[in-house]
Image (tube, rainbow, N blue to C red; front, side):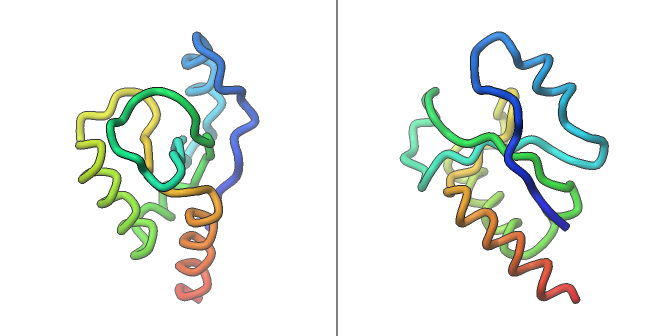
Length: 99
């Protein structure tokens, strides 16, 4: 199970190209630091994660936090209120626990 940083830039207008760059069985996520609320535009790190990683307990907890903070009606890439390091650790811990 894994994730990787997206190779696509975060410039405007490239949403269609970015969506096409996501491999089958994966989903794009925008990791927006420690949250900060508001859901405004701006920074964040775009990563691509395997869909099966989303069902793991620690990653699921991050998704529940995203639902509380940003709601279920997000348009475009899914925003998750955590740092890339936190997300990486969640995926790695869940993958290690599944062995």
